[in-house]
Length: 279
Length: 278
Image 1 (cartoon, each protein chain N blue to C red):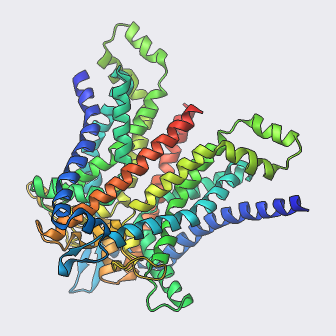
Image 2 (cartoon, chains in turn yellow, blue):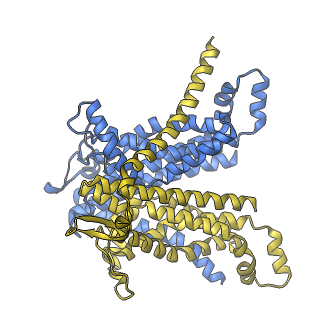
Image 3 (cartoon, rainbow over the protein chains, first blue to last red):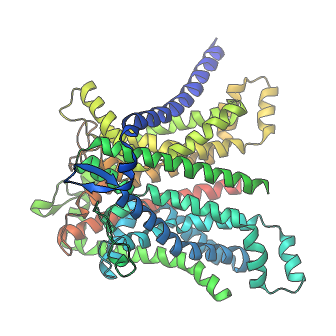
């Protein structure tokens, strides 16, 4: 009798909790689409906010988001891949490897509000970049570094030893071997790392709110003005409309776009990840 | 080239040092001016009167995180058992992407839904003057830590050797008894790591709870408007004057939060290390 009760309660808990998890996602997605999808049209995506016409457009936020993604990747990608190559190919001293890996894990564990503070002190104030997209991108470059290091490292580890030995045996130097054999065969992992990093950047809001500004106006991205550009990315724009303007229709439309981006990013990362595992 | 790669490796270490040093340097002055005891145990945070006591913020962060763990861990654990042991492969293959999608949704989106659904609902159900409360924050946080708890526990449960479970089944235990009394204890350090990671996530979250917690620096109570360590920083960072005591106090709050996170990370590393040794 007691055993039967145990069985029933256990089953109810297992199925119930799984149902809660799936139900939560279905509710979130459904609710966001329900309230947001109606507001999305070409004008919403392709113009900036106009008080005169009374229209809302999020093109500046889209452009700002792209800018932040590109700049933070340009900074972080070489550093992250370089660190991973060092850890798997060059490092001899075990203790030093442990230190670098610990540092990378620490960076991954620091919450974004701390990055916001650090970005404000280091990039906005000390380096006098002010509140600009550039300062925000540089802060985010530090934040996404561990993501890139980790996934590059994982894919470098899957390159068979025989490849390296073959290349070295044919007389290539170490750097030549890395450049022509090791890195090309771990491209999948590096790309996966980039996609995950893009996911973090797209979803990030706290850092950008305090280091990159909240303006919804179109920024000037011409080369001589680029350092001064300052504005809201999609997430910051969402916060701006929801909390400061209480304009929930727009906020949910931006949430819909963020949701679609998240789905795309997740699927491409897991698709590449699976491909990586197979090869 | 080796020099370049070594430098890249050093950069990560450099960043950690840079962050630590800057946080300490900018966090100390306000604590000096206010006094360590008054800062940590002062019950009033009121920028208008230049009083900066962060006890309400600390307690709110602790209670909020504890609440999120109490709700999120059981749901996450049972879902993980379901995924790892019970679910047919087809079903598990559908649920797993669902979990990673939950993990990928930006925190402002959680905040937005919390603001528009949860807060009004709490106001109606509990007949509160305003639904922005610690309870709302706890619910949002428990949803947000769910994915990391599920995926880490699932990995740990899947790593349990088949022989353990087979032995238990052969001795006449039912499948469920085996999962709960053999598999789960065998995976306990992995599950512990999942819980600690969840704690780290919850204590560091700022934007989502800023949108649902009301942000008044009250002593914490479930239905009261509260301010966390994280939101304590975020709510005033844009309005504080550069160089003012208020701005400096915000950096001190950051330093306290950073210490909390470092302790949690150290503990996480310890748990993970023990798991690897097993």
